[in-house]
Image (cartoon, rainbow, N blue to C red):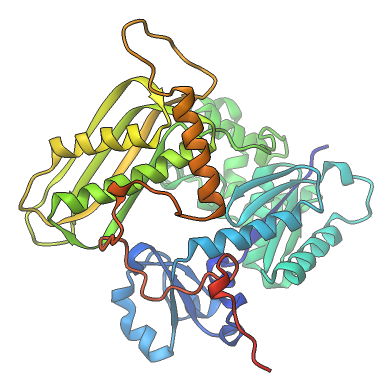
Length: 422
């Protein structure tokens, strides 16, 4: 019988910030999105003040001031470093771990069927992560990944559980499904929730009791698989290695409105450089380049939203080629006189590096020399971040997103290591 554990960090971004600011424990803390626009992580104390997920920070300025809410800008470098430590710790408890997101991981515990209590094993994991990483986590244990997700949700919702819930009997499974709203079921999104609710299905239990044939006819095989998982039949395997992405997108809102094409070109060049790096990390190449620019839909200024694409004769992962193509697209879609708020790039038609469709009439783009050059650039930048970059990305980058409340990179920058005074 399969057994999975879902380990999910509690308010991960906030927990990372509090790790180096112990004075903030028990106090309201929020972390803002890009450009400090919305609250994307909240401490329990901030939630108790009524601050909702995704709420614009400018709308809650009064609450922030009145209750002394501490605000942080998103520090993804710090979160990635701490996430790596958490995942390394979890790997001590299972030979098979699927890193599902920056703050979640599935562990395969099937090999532990002989131990007396998987729940106690869960508490052991929780204690180890807290001691070695300083990050609180909750754990759900069940025979399918979908049930483990629900068990984890229950562990977070009900403090009496101590942060660990195991579904190890039919009675517990039914009880959990009956109290779980349909929108908390893994894989049931907002649209599907509305459709199911219109049919009178409001809990996970009601969904689990629908006939599989009816689900397949009225919805699809994906939801049918979810129903089977809710009934204890394991249909979703552990993915220890994340599949290569079919599309890679890099985009940001600017810290200020941009009118100048040169500044837009800098941002496009910067985003494409990042996208190309991700492309090479997954050992892939792309044949289609897309670029978009737009004004802010929330402003009263004239609106403009446009995108363009270009298909290359051969796939490539060479940053120089991709940036050149992206800037060419920008030339065709840029219009002066608008206040641009956001730009982005997307790489599509992605194929594996080892696959190549030859063409007699056009020369290959990725030669062995260009591949070697990109490899060396990536190696240097991994050791010395941002040491090498194209001049077209600029050095000033005044359009970069605003992060007025950014915490130091305590774990990745010698100059920002915390000081202890005795």
